[in-house]
Image (cartoon, rainbow, N blue to C red):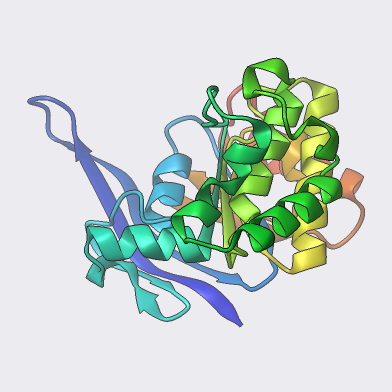
Length: 253
């Protein structure tokens, strides 16, 4: 069952007095329930713009984005905010945690906004932090924990309202290799245990190899869409080969 249907999506931006620059050009994409998809491509290919449009942070100039049949363009700002809070989870490269709050308080924010009962908030927080291995740091402030722990805190926060999909924008961009491996293992676990769809923008082929599918963009167009059919190692090398063909950045390689 498709949870996201993207039909002929275009997006342009105007920079100062210059002509508009087309960032996305005729994007068509379907994402099924339970998929784990990496969105990749060279710098400037439109990866983050596409993720922002899919998550309702930005809107397309042309085309449709249907989320479980609902057209995001038909929602006003308050409707979109509520829809995102209830149906989507967000994970960012910069973590976007509040330093003045504890790990536990950061995780509970979406549930507080939804006015959940305290018993439910406590139970969900405990269960998710045990799943992601951070139940022992709940009372620490975020400035006291490592980057990998911050990202796992952000993943817990993204999961507490049981979203249909998690959107992750370079979630391993600020992490070392060990933390990258840990975070990707946890995202994979979340995807498999909860059947939560995950769409992840990344330049990191190693991180992308944990996904089940990779969509490659170049110049605002999808130029490859590949499925993992064998081992993670083989998928990693297939991604590397495709990126080299389309002129990926040195970071991509």
